[in-house]
Length: 330
Image 1 (tube, rainbow, N blue to C red):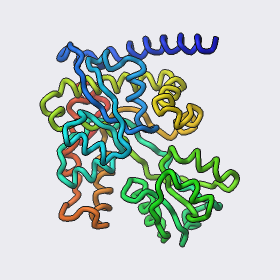
Image 2: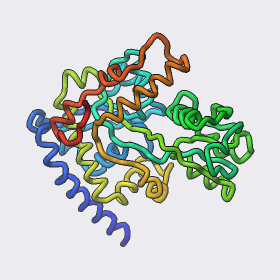
Image 3: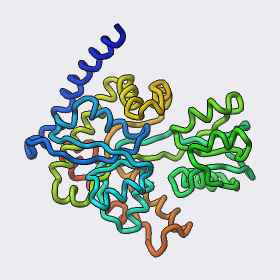
Image 4: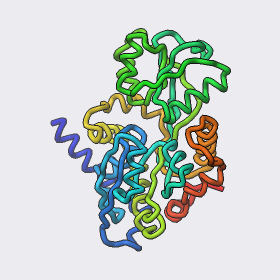
């Protein structure tokens, strides 16, 4: 009976979601009535639920396109596929886009799909303040936004610690063994850390946010803007569907992640996200700050990371054409 009820709910939600998409999709359908096949590289995780929700709810075809969704282990690998013409769109956290822009790779950010406000440092000892981390061994994935967030927060609080490279799959065990005292892990690792440490688990939140962006290949952005608008129409429809029924959206994402994260775990993390495709000044400002951090660390040389550089890889015209209220870039 529960299975039947779930199927009926899903059918009703699908119809509702398609109806919610209609207004946003009209411009794309008017210019591209045929369903166009494309390829999208989706970074599996919490931050981009619009991709699997759009697939599950039939929003792609309603917007005039028919994507093949592929996955990559990291943002840089997805970028290689995008630059090489193997995929037309990709999703990633903002830092890989920062490094790509500084390396003069050709791509276009067309939407900021979500903002995450739940970044935290986890530890195997009580951490009432950031100062508690002074002199401690802290693990993170070097070269990622996690390292940037960790170093930025420690620096702003005048705290010095030893930062070590620890793979996401090793964080929980390293904390349990005491190889590290704390970590700034990817958010999907936190449930395992909590389970492993039990009552030894402690955390402290940090204020910095992380963005998750939708990127189009330069050819797609310049030669097929109607397809970009179609994809964005599906994203706006997914935004509305997620808000209309977050529980079903969480179930859909969990299924898309093949059970790596449960719907209950997603429900717990959901309030830390702002799921809505938009483009505002916070994105290029954050990218500039990260670019300056990259340059200062010597990771990329002979590039001046200005806000003009990062603004140049953002095209707000397709999103503005569909929903001007979602674009407030200067």
